[in-house]
Image 1 (cartoon, rainbow, N blue to C red):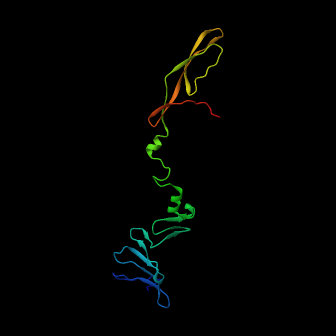
Image 2: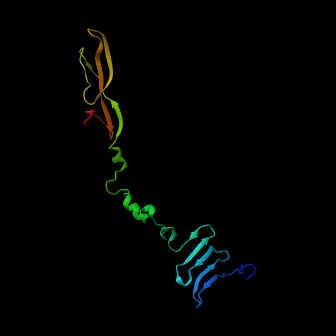
Length: 183
């Protein structure tokens, strides 16, 4: 031992620093081999394997690594409150459905269920007599009108032009039959 409490072990072969009980049982080994992979800490008689502070900057543990109440298992699984105090693999299995399982849709099945395009159908016209109101037929929208200024009460809507709304689903055009409020 040198002045100041520093301990130096010199040599090219392995020279572990050993913590031992009075009865000689080893409590811990600490060592680094020349050219080795990193600093090793071994739990001695209590077992558990080597913990390595690797020369690549990583840390290797023979079993779980704990951070507060969370832990990383040797197989890469993670346990913690973020996953409802369960293992991550169990959380994912309960939360998400595996691809191709149950009622999941393929892209083709999904494409067949939504509106891909909208257009107006052929334009038709309704001629309106004076002093009346006119609605476009169900499923149709108004696209134009003609005003007449020679009626007995002044200008009135002479003609309403409308067309049916059409939607494309799964490659097929369909005419909407009713767009009124169904309440």
